[in-house]
Length: 257
Image (cartoon, rainbow, N blue to C red):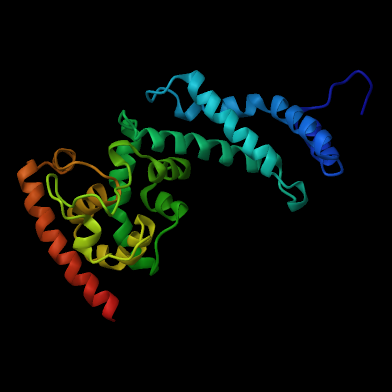
């Protein structure tokens, strides 16, 4: 290194991780503190896409710093990856979890909502074409959307928070979604339900898929669903009743095959 020229953040990060690999516990803690301070700007930058959604910038940055700490402690340079390629997804994942934990008390941006509606409409079609659940990159290509937007839309919560299978199928109803669909095994979560239902959902119409996705996987109310598809809340309730019966019947056929 030339005298008088400070090393770049990237070079210094590499140097510190190299030192950490041979350090004792006390030295390791000090080196990790240096790595965290050195990369705080990276954490701040990773929050930019999440700003203006109802959470103060200072709070977002604090959450991002938590993600940065996890990234520094969890990064293994021996795997041959650049630290940023590990840190940025880790930090953004921490911020997304924070939004999910808050339940998205504010709506996601309109661009995310619009992307979600398009994704819901095409997922069944792509499943039929591919014979499996589509990847975000395949959804993005099919819809002509940016892949990052698709990934963000798939991960967004709020009125779209994933519904628990213990939640009631209808508002004011004590019978949970899981029981209605026959998912009675303890620990059967939404991800598993989505995987089992994928071939069944592929048989539904575009509007039916939107209803199922919004109600059972994103936790929207009947009023929110009605607003999205242009019908009344009472009509949504009737549609849900018919869809529950159809899904249960189709699911029984699928599982028996």
